[in-house]
Length: 446
Image 1 (cartoon, helix red, strand yellow):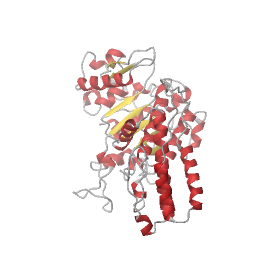
Image 2 (cartoon, rainbow, N blue to C red; image 1 turned 30 degrees about the horizontal axis):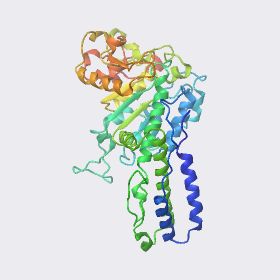
Image 3 (spheres, rainbow, N blue to C red; image 1 turned 90 degrees about the vertical axis):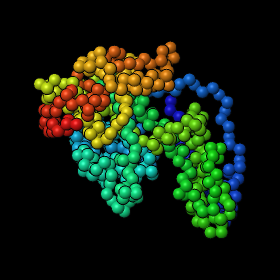
Image 4 (tube, helix red, strand yellow; image 1 turned 30 degrees about the vertical axis):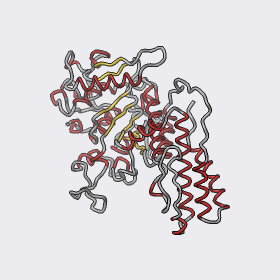
């Protein structure tokens, strides 16, 4: 069972504060209330041994959409939800019988399944990144637009500029991370893992951001520490300036929200250092999450997308005579468009059926060969294994190359993502015939 969101406790606190506000007569009374609130001893969690691990259930497609929409709604400063259909103009896989739950998404038009993308990014720090703009403000659904940006810089001189006169946008300054939940629709653990991970990251980032300094009434000191949630007291200046009661109330509400969410996270095994670390993961990078890349396969609980394996659909180590056998799926095209419009130095994709952290190579041409950065990959995979350890009764995750630990394939997503841009001899320009054949070959020219 999932721990309830902090939203309910925050709403309760706000309601109590509003009731208190109605009886307040002067700003000095409000200041005294805040000071008293911060001086009160914080309630201690009941002494109990936390469970070794929480129990989760695999989320079906309708609940995944519901959870994604809730994350985008509950954490608007850190989360953006879109689809590769509205972002890049891709078609939907499936028929009118598939993914009826997608009708709950505002821009869902036509038959088939949406391919959802959740972007985790600090919009307060990087507000002008087109990744996180509203679909109504975003440029037309065309990946070429993103590639046309000169080095990621924007040209609006009215915005904050750097010393060279260029706007400092998130596109230029934030590294990208790619996370994929389900290329094979019957491998079920990935989407749930990514949804739960996203919620934990967003809750931590939101909690760490409170109270927000831009709402601090004049005359209030910062007093930021984890004991009082950054409440801060008054030095009396707000009274002298006639501070508006509404501004003081907003600051007071955020103080209470900070206290509440920090206690809630601590009660669930996320103490202060972990919370700060999780929040930093949101504020210092752009994480692009595609929970169900193979949305149709996941909805049907089938490995393929309408009979085509998306993990054989990428233009790497594919024989030239078979160039019509890549980029056939919406899953493959969705990931291709994300990689064409971002620079992902690292990524992770979930599969199912075995416990292993596997990395390149996983292609027949490179059987018995090490990747150029094999040592780095082995080091990262080993760290993953040690950090994750193992489930009760299981050993820690094994790790090694896909050629050694799994099996090699032609057209695999992982090797394509790793080497498609710098190993052109292994890449073909795809000419698929699916969906009307209207996927240009140059979209697989890297």
